[in-house]
Length: 37
Image (cartoon, rainbow, N blue to C red; front, side, top):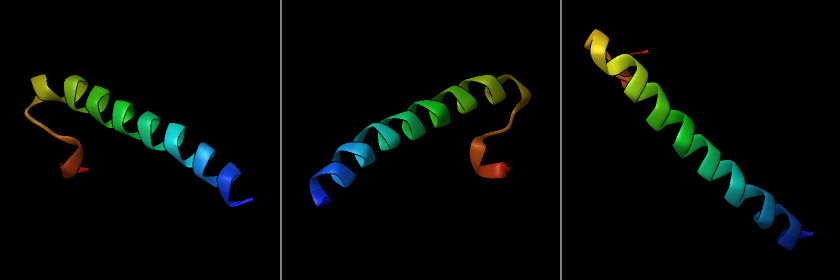
């Protein structure tokens, strides 16, 4: 169902955003960013 796919896509997008933010926070002291990986 398209509705089910949309409901799954939203949390996945949020989790990806949170993970990227955490990665940037972790790498920041090392002078890196997630874009360097």
